[in-house]
Image: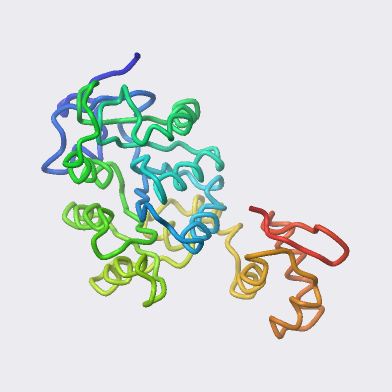
Length: 286
């Protein structure tokens, strides 16, 4: 197994991680680490996510290929895996931080995902030596590495006892921005994110909020904004969320004029957000 060991005094040790007081003395790395990489976003959330959480990942990271951004997460079930997959789909680097040795994948069902991360110029890292099992106590500790590698942390769905809140708390301690996706007050998976917002986390309702929080250069913002839907476009996308719809349905449900809906559909097609699947019938591009 090819890997490298980075010591916190090495010049190749990640710059952002080096800034936190409880950084790991050693970092075991498979794949590529870019020491001065700063445009890193940690994405964490519920293991048992809802369709809402999955849709947020799809919609938020649709413009990902247009921005210079690396996604950092924990290769866990749920939102972690969706975040890594979104990065790969956008042909962007992603870094997986493990709570075990880098010679194993936990959960084992994510073996192919781990391989895809490495093939796409990404990295798999851990503070634990090869051979270390995935002990439960390792995971809260690895969360500080996820937060430490990143300029900001985004929480997508989390209950009040979710480990994602540990990552968010650590990010705040490291003076990094925390964003949380708001959700229904009746949904257990939104209790943690809504609580974070009450405590001062930035509410994230679109990819633009992420770009602003990371304070990317203007040219990067412009690239991402090209694909960001307007409120009226979001309304049409919402009506197409579950299944293909006829144009007449969209006109009636939106309350917009036929010419306005036709124009919105054309724009959304050009943006690659929807596609025509029949005569005057449209669906979202998944």
